[in-house]
Length: 137
Ligand code: GCU
Image 1: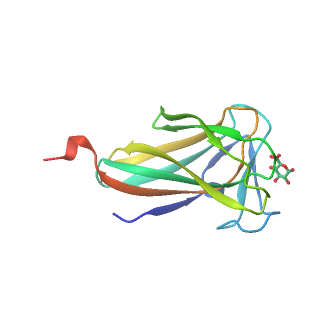
Image 2: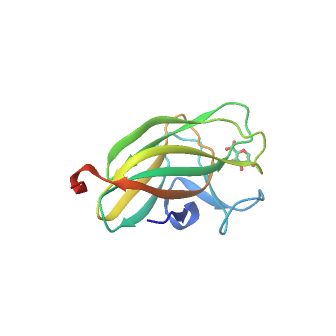
């Protein structure tokens, strides 16, 4: 199955703003989280089969200290305090990855600030890596 891109600015945003004042983003912009723990972007990702997947979060972080996000899928934490290291500039974008198992149909993938502020979040790329265990013959 092919990888799919999901723009942060098209997700459900809680305590964050869609901005476009730093270049290099995809789509219409990126999400700038408020300086608060618990701010989130929730992506809705559809898959036809239960599948393992790699989640690549594209972000920029021009500050000097790493920030973290909790990643959950359908309410279950798949990465606790996932670290987003500084990228050197707000216009330099990199990816941080997590692994998850997706169910058939809709999946709610949420990235929530867990250290008081988050990186600027551009998009999520979901790459299926194989069928989930329940689907193996
Ligand atoms: C700067 C930058 C913002 C960023 C913020 C932060 O203000 O312009 O895009 O979100 O720092 O520290 O999070």
